[in-house]
Length: 120
Image 1 (tube, rainbow, N blue to C red):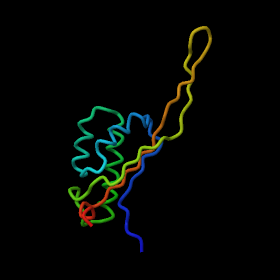
Image 2 (cartoon, rainbow, N blue to C red; image 1 turned 180 degrees about the vertical axis):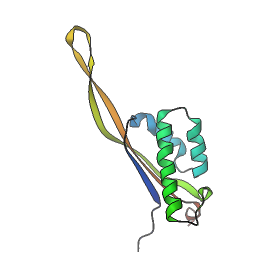
Image 3 (spheres, rainbow, N blue to C red; image 1 turned 90 degrees about the vertical axis):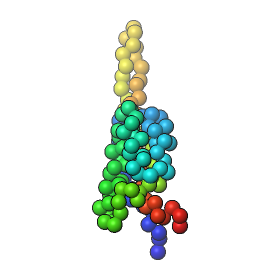
């Protein structure tokens, strides 16, 4: 039988560029849950707010599926920031010309797991 891989949450089609979210994701990867949330609250960035929301959702999934868990027992096992689709917008330029503005989206996947499983 397969070993359980943790508790996950996915945020899709988030209107923030993956390039802006990835440096923030690097700060909280493999950290305890409470420390990760504290770091995200201190960062004044829209991407940090979206990342925090997905992280809290993964923790809520963990706590609802396993009643013996506490927030102190969780850590960020995996954190992926993938590129979603792009919205193409027109940006008017001089002399009747135009440029294409790409509004990038992100898909954020967070997996949290128990700290006790780290030593095994």
